[in-house]
Length: 202
Image 1 (cartoon, rainbow, N blue to C red):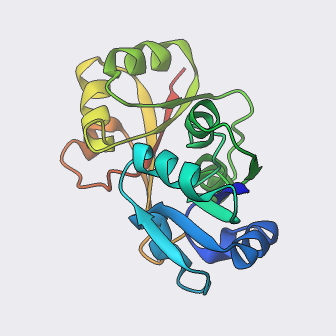
Image 2 (tube, rainbow, N blue to C red):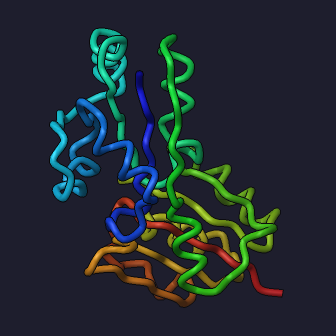
């Protein structure tokens, strides 16, 4: 049996009790290094994976006779790993949801995201500008290339009248939430795993 377990933004304070229950009763926990490192308080055996291909090969070889929990940051079904696993693994899977970073950040701000466009930036900067123009409020997962500094530069270059909110290291002790105009963050050093909220003016 393979569980895909969401552990939320990172801090154990935001991991659902059901997720902790599943992780503790599993024979083994697998996942990428950053996520595994957040689970030092759980004694279950842990194995670090280095690629999606390695994960599939591992659960195909070990998932039939063991209870394996594949851990993922945020919510596994929200721009997460669960879709890839479902398409590439034919065995039994159960997903345990987690709190998404979008939920965490908007809650910290007491800002509704009911009508926001939600997106993930992976080599699609043209779509970023198009979607920002189309939507009053948009929220974005970033990566090492299309990080918040890069995206703020794009907003500035395209003369988008807006306010931005940057959330990095969400739920950790070094959490930062920055707010202002894109031009204020053109040289800001921000984590590659940050969240960017863009709110158009007018």
